[in-house]
Image (cartoon, rainbow, N blue to C red):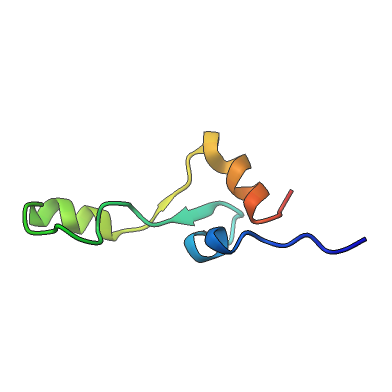
Length: 65
């Protein structure tokens, strides 16, 4: 039986925390930054966790299930 491969796009976008949760970056921080406020851009800089509803899909892409 061959090994299952991790989705390349998922392994580039998500990281696991020590407690097993999945970290992600915010969207809307790559271009067209001139019209966005400094406060908004700063908030988008920080990482956040994947929502509980999406966690199973991300784990499947990372082949953790």
